[in-house]
Image 1: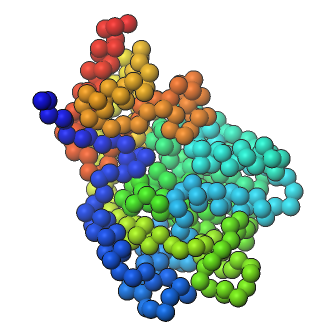
Image 2 (image 1 turned 90 degrees about the horizontal axis):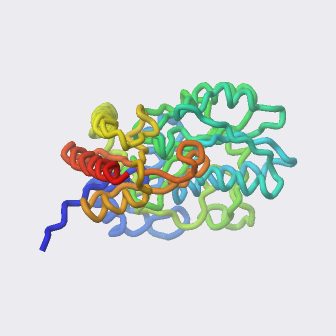
Image 3 (image 1 turned 135 degrees about the vertical axis):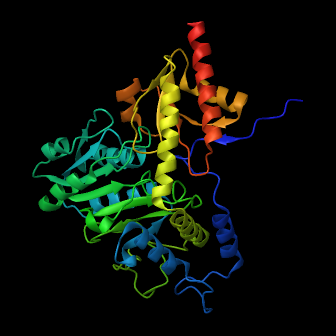
Length: 386
């Protein structure tokens, strides 16, 4: 009986794996302790995960006030809270700007608001994986109240110039939401030095947390109304949702194991060091680029990604077929399809989708070599059949 090849996991832009042992241990310990949520029991918490979690995230992102950190289910949940909450605060139809690089976590809420007649919506195109800040600035009108864009593309691995955009929008008083799902670990961030109104993060990707935890930090909550209400453990006599942070947006019982995983994941990253992480990612992406670009049948859609993300296709093969071959023949896990970014794929591959390769800190150089050789072999075989 043929022995199966060891698993090579290259889908970390979706969800990172494996998780550090410290994260798994932290989750286990959180489940062994009695939960201690504010106002939800007479006992004293063994560990105040919420306060510790907010302080950890705030310090990691360079924010002074932990209370501005709001926990959510994930980045999609956070973006929905912010987008719909902002729309709820507006008294008339208004203009929103986003980009063609966006994930459906941005596109679908905005499309819904446009379809229901609440907003005018413009999609700014990209060129060479970048959105020109001037294109966003030129699209601003006197009815523009909101701009939503990602910091890093989940398909092309390109990082956008949110500083230039933010400075202009701040001067105009336009609310600016940035989706940082892909950049929370790969790009050093000091949010206090950026003119952002809200920055969204997720825990289960580069921060090595478990699924089901994410959040956002918000500078001024006044323009974003709470669109979901419920128990907070505070001021329970009032039927109104509390207006203070973070209870303004956090409802129900918190995901304590998720917060514990986030604390442990960030601690693990800080132990390694951001420079060390980036150097390894750069080296491995450079290797993939060199190897894959040597095969004429492989198209790489962004040869110089800022993040450890490679989008490619093989001539003569559907991307899903490539993924199937890699999984069944070599036990290599990649991502195929549209990656929840339909406008981006319409621009780069006529909506066909692509193969996405995304290593992590735990990916070895040997695994990169095996994966690159496997992809080149598929391309070479496909070329011989054309």
